[in-house]
Length: 275
Image (cartoon, rainbow, N blue to C red):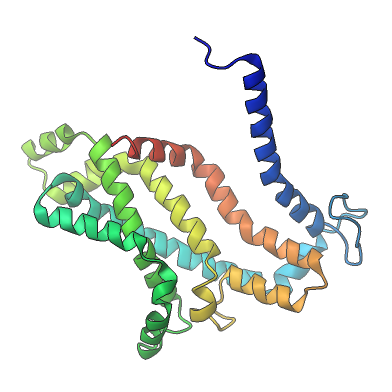
């Protein structure tokens, strides 16, 4: 039975088209601005009179995007790796052993998710200075893992409970496999969808993090892309073409990651929310 009439379907299609346009327009402005030659002050809605790909080369060199991209990639990669390993290992016993202690620990992690990260900025900054970790990539990795570990455990635990059959683990125990073997050889390969979900959510935030990076990574040698682009914008506020080119370079890696993992991302959210 058809739930919508022809007019209702047309209205929904128009609404979806409008939402898509609202998301596409900023990218259109960013791309066209980045390709305009210096001195081209035409409307942001107009295509470039002369296509200038040199903006990307100039922005890459002047903003030191190579160093910043390496720092962002290094921090994002190791933060995501620690999150996946630690989060999945912690979530497995919490999902399978429903003891009072495990329930308390699980609720504790959920409670941590409610705390706004910026509320701990002052004591965290003092601790980082005391430990001599200021302007090091390590402090960014530790901070990101601490910020996203609770969410990672929450997502993995929900997915394991609702999706991974216990019978597979019981069969492996009968064959003599220990807990770690069962987890890494049977359970973890089944966690691909939720792992993609964790990767996208965490990596996009970590890659674009500005509020903590501006305090902890102040030296140019350890600055991440958001901080480098922000500094570049301050120096070239009159040359928006170069700033747009730098911004486009900064967002490209995470855009490609999302396009590559979006199928698993949607599947992980859908299956993880069954229970």
